[in-house]
Length: 381
Ligand code: BGC
Image 1 (cartoon, rainbow, N blue to C red):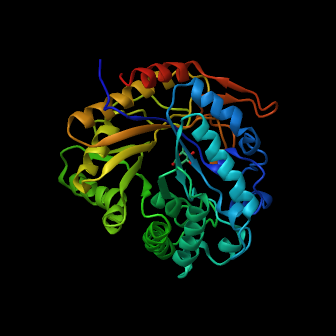
Image 2 (cartoon, rainbow, N blue to C red):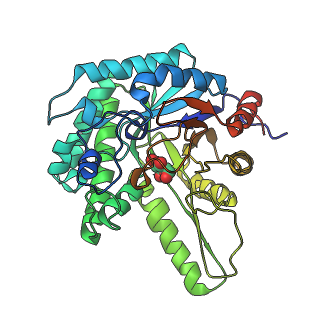
């Protein structure tokens, strides 16, 4: 039996736009109205059904849950804050506390309020001011028992998809915009970190960083490429904010091997290779920061639920191996609790421990979720 450290956090993550429904004043909703991305609509209606969903979390043996706050709800117009929406999120957090589930609060998960996107979003040189003002406001207003916050989800992923590969709003292909956004996201994190700590010095703040395991054969060119990409994609952003984070949140989905021979790997419904060893290596790469680490996302699109159980067990094997190698990991959050709006892929890809019927909104626990429950209950693999 592979034991995990005492008080290990077990749970799952969701993101507001992907599950809540009814969010119309964002760049994504606007892009959907223009026919450029799928419509999100009422999604899982988690905005209204959160109590039910949190009962499921309890039934699944989790002790933690990561939610995100929708910036466009809180600040629907520039400088105008909606108290009603703060009250809503307070109720959501209370509902978690009432069930003894530790909330982790993510301030921003990809979607921009329309007013902010019209100003150029994170291309705007004042973006860190707007972002920090929003984060400070929320932190001050919540002022409850929740003590763990994430400022930004996956800075490189949003910058790449939105400013380099034209997949996400504002659909750009401009290296200068990409680099400017990365710089402004780094500044925004630091500004938010300081502003939030001023409101509540006791809270712990990190980001969720998507890291990829780059590896290669013995070809020297490939080895250099791997060194460069590991630095550029995995470490450069973290290096820039290293004095302004209390913990590191790691999101992990990909490995990329340069040069042959290629290993034959099973694939998820996204066509992504299942490569559990990758999680071990990216965790080890984070050891240098001497911060505690939580896996804030790791998961699989698997509509038939035939691969998720083995996926979870094998990736958790890598987490355990990294802990044994001295990486201070204090939790694992599976992506995701519910099937949800998978961005440019809409609702077709199913990442949930819990299946959602989008016609009836019925939830159905997948068998793999019950296998994951056994691990959470035993705090062991
Ligand atoms: C994102 C999620 C997304 C998941 C699966 C992560 O990069 O944070 O929003 O649903 O990957 O693609």
